[in-house]
Image 1: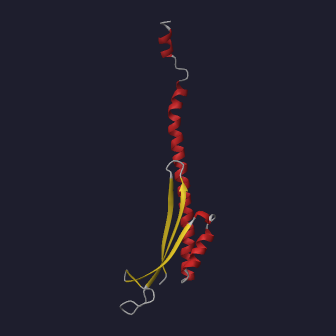
Image 2: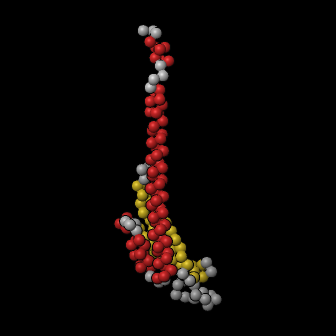
Image 3: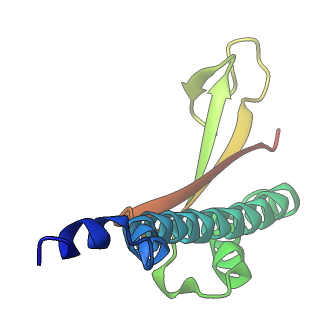
Length: 140
């Protein structure tokens, strides 16, 4: 019986199975983290695309924030969980101003559209979070 213990300690059969059992959870966690980040980046790229479509609409539709918002929602493959805000902002020399009044030099204020899109992402590893995209377009 005493000779059995040293013989078992020298036996190397199954060592790679034990090593794999130790390393496998780390590899699987790394794979899940990569998939989670990849899905989040794909969603961010989709949001960037639809916000750019809204920016192009802002350049051509000039004065209708609701039409720009509708176009952004229509550009999305799944608009159900998408939150979109389009805001018209005016400024005189970098300072917020009224869109209807002239600037101090008698010039028209600069007109911008700010387009924000936001969508929830249920991460596999990093948990739920919001994916956000923003664009600011100068019209005048």
